[in-house]
Length: 114
Length: 115
Image 1 (cartoon, each protein chain N blue to C red):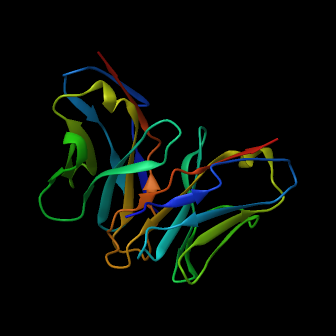
Image 2: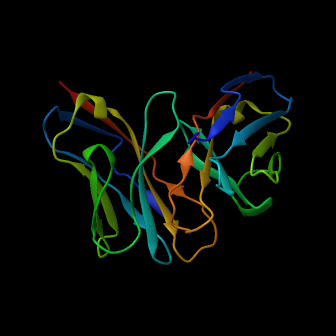
């Protein structure tokens, strides 16, 4: 069974640009969550999508947005990039049943803003 | 609001010795608790979870964790550490009464196992 796939693995962008990251969940998983990992702030929750609807949202500015498609694949977008957006962005998927089901993480996208 | 504390930034242990990584949590309701491990330049790998029932939970790679409701703790343990256990460990909590799959993570504990 394939794991969570995130593309691209590495990305370098310039301040002010926008970026789109992609996540393909494990087959059958309908919940997709996004996290930002930085050395200073640790792992922070961005948002969660379930059946194409945003179910939870973390405390990030509106520049961070996401969406989920009918096949459960998800994208997150960051507009007007700032240096502080440099981070490892992790996507996680979970099963439909059981709110307690563990989340499976992808390898992440390393975003560097210069 | 929910929160997780991992009081030790780093834990050093000799190979073959017991390993303990501490975690305390705070949630308004009852918790689901998780441990994850992260190797360099990789995502998080699931180790174990506490949902309900037995307070001692066994997981992957010989790890176990003990849920203590009165102390709101969920410490990770391994009886005999290996050099390959050197990694970054994260404790996470989800509020059982909250909708969705939002995880709140602790700051992480770096484990260094010396030969």
